[in-house]
Image (cartoon, rainbow, N blue to C red; front, side):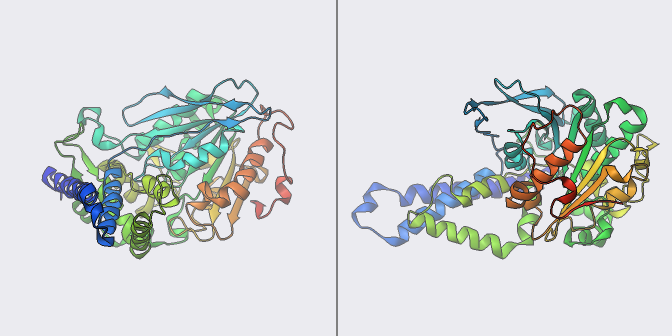
Length: 433
């Protein structure tokens, strides 16, 4: 598998399908065919439109497209993206709200490097902007990073996060979503020991695999069912000649996407069949529910091979975070050193990627943290996506996270945000003992 030819073959298949879709749409749309209306041509055009859009999205990084929001005084606030720190494998991105000078919570969203771009958290960013000054880790597609930039594994990832925290300084609130949760916990512990003044005020871990063995899922079962040698042979390829990262070893986004889809193949097949029918019947539009979801879902990025392999080996197989034996550059990171950072975990009862029990394990690892600084929330009926971007996030989890931030924030003025019930009375909010 580890050849440029294999990588280029996958890109050739994708490119061919995109061309077939475009060709079918163009042929079925000839004006002359309108003289003799034929439902089959309508269906052919619909198939072509959906197919071309589907395969073209797989190599496009989505735009953030953060809309303006209206403040409490009825004024539009324009949001501008600014790069604060630029690095080869990822940037620290700031969403600056023009004209806003009121005190606000400073929040760093740590986005996953697990196959999709950071734009997967677009709705999370939008929901936080009215109440927070939002920053995010914007990871780069490994196929576009020259080999000369060097390697990038989970230790490098952890150090990137510590650097971003140092840059943002005190009174910072960190929210890590899914994959980066264990490494963000390690980064916080590293700062607690080496640079306490750079620690965040709060750390919220959402659906992350702190202890994957606590509640096995299909993802964890796969990690234990193959050896590292088999995984490297099956999953790792070398970037082909089309991209700037030619020769770099990666876990390809297209290969990841095939794995994502195979987990719910029937659901995705039905969704695309229904969309073709809607297009044929004139019921679909550019920004309908299907396009909005799949434009993001299909946009995948390559991961550096060393990052992917070290994640499986050290987080899932060896459980280094779960056993508090994780090291960075040869130095042990002791999670028990966290004593001043309030830590909250969020899980969903129907999360089939990081099942309930995996994330809350972080609280037991924080042996040096007082119980008053620990909290957990289990969202009933929520799946993996819902706990950070769906209805569950908007209606229940987001308010609880903001309340948790306010309870452990010195810089946020009283009554800056209209609070609901106190955290101790909030539904499903448990202070961990």
